[in-house]
Image 1 (cartoon, rainbow, N blue to C red):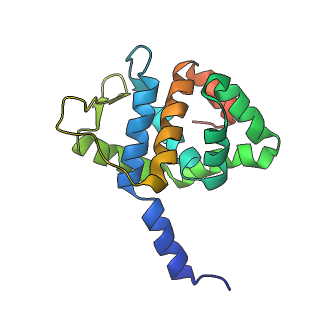
Image 2 (cartoon, rainbow, N blue to C red):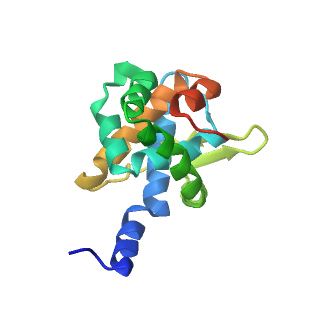
Length: 168
């Protein structure tokens, strides 16, 4: 039995929402800033949600060792070329959600934007009363986002888009 279209759309809105997106992009930024605290290019933030909000791609991400890097992640996805190429299509489909997520992240002070340099910074919340508490079912999304940020920080934007076969 298949779910009714309205049920499917409701399920998507539960998972694909700006709150979860803001959290994911914030964790991505924390991972990116881990080694030298430099902010991430605003454009790269649009690649986070298409990767971490897709079950199969997220599974590949979390099962790839941190030390393996983006190249091995891309190679794993590239074994079935359509899985790698689908990231670009999802990036286009989720760009509005990504933008809404960044906007919510800025509004809640998880993120800051340097408009002059088009850079995004994940703000450290250690000095705040407490870090966000997330349900167990989305911990993989946060951990995967942070790992992705770390991998992106080790490469140039050109290497990232080449590895993931995306265009800006």
